[in-house]
Image (cartoon, rainbow, N blue to C red):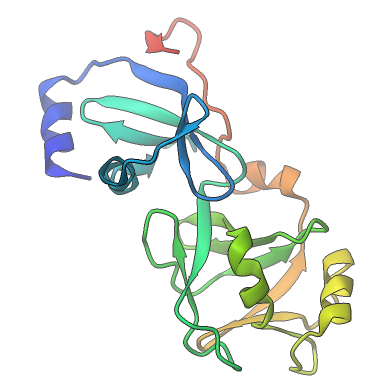
Length: 201
């Protein structure tokens, strides 16, 4: 968290929180009232001050004011960081706020072609533009790269032994129902004020 934000919180501790204004879309873009934020310094400021509270609500700490975030899907959007070679040795993942994912813990596919990845900070969805490259990092139970037909079968029903290979990691892949993820990973997609809370909406 930026020092200027921490100082503002200490100086004005009781500023009402904001709900329903800021949104994170499936491409990792910040939107205010459904309008994308294009100012680079503003985006970087939001990224540095993006956090999660104890109730699973994600927020941007804007000075003394907490701005809760509506999530189109997950708290993080992931992209490839590094090149994808024939063994995906150099490939790694980074979140939309610029933090390294490290070693993925679990990977899921959904029938719509999405890839969801759990890591130390939570769960994220792969950025759609990086999916064609990421497909090169999947292998079947025999360690073979997937061709188009094998990938389509995997989306319909991941086969035993399907793995995602990133660097030195080999992570098993399973089928996911996106509608169950919020509860399993304890995050709130659309935070709203509690009854009687002094809030900005």
